[in-house]
Length: 392
Image 1 (cartoon, rainbow, N blue to C red):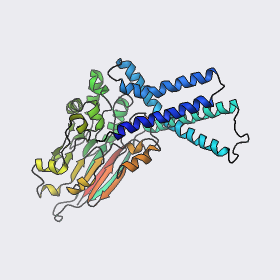
Image 2 (spheres, rainbow, N blue to C red):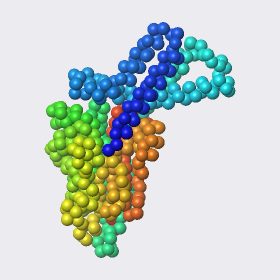
Image 3 (cartoon, rainbow, N blue to C red):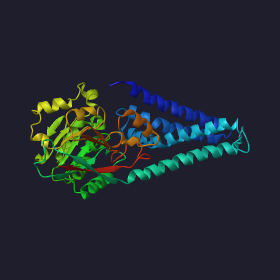
Image 4 (cartoon, rainbow, N blue to C red):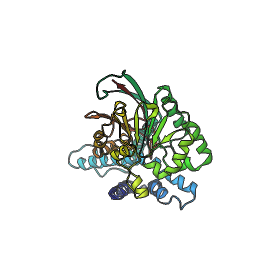
């Protein structure tokens, strides 16, 4: 995997914060003690996230978690503060050509303080609205038609799939949110529950004995006649995929890693390991055709069952189509989670959200049921997806 994103993201983070610091420092010139307080507070929040991540394992656990917590909370107001600051600066430059304000620059001290105050309040207000939005999980429903090959000797039937992804159980997404996910899912009375990765955000719920037992109890509450099946996402690998698998196994959830199963003999299900496995082990995951081959391929009887692929990251969608999959379910994208990040995410993936069809293969990429980083959503809502396969 290319190291470009690993280098690009911290550079962008540094540029954004350097730009905002310079603008705050200059705008608050002449305010004396106020400027010092604001700049120190800004630096505290700005360094929290990178320090918490980089020094995790070296600092005392509580200090590392405080830094990560503060830094994660800061990410959303940072983004919106940056956008609003850029807009303000563009208007300031335009004001030198076309008079927008009654009193053109240089602005008074009170005017400059008012601008900084407005930008701060507006950024926090947007963040709070997004935090409220992230608390309420919605349930959406789609019907997908699939015609079995070779005629229609068998009776038509429906298979109801509950798709849950990107819970990110960790410091921000806790027991209350997970309980809500389980209850809302069970209310839909699905035939099968599929959890499409990024179940855990970090090792917090895997390494703490009390939280671990609570998580086992909550995950074991999923109810579906064909069971609950899961795949790992990139964050599950970061958190510790072996421990995650053990926890889920104790909860009665099957974690599939490049495996094929046939729950109840009613569908063929392939659960793929995440692409990030290569970073952790140096070995690439199996290709879909190789997974099929390792299980002896599909018989003519198997092909009369829907073939469902679970793949956390929705890259290379053609691969599922090439094996004749009925449906692929994915997550990972969060639908961008924050505006305007969703615009960048839409450029990265062939499809970053929603129901999609290529040939005879349907795809659903969900925005996920939790959040990563700041517990804030301004792009989309956390969701549980109900996919009803109409099989004829």
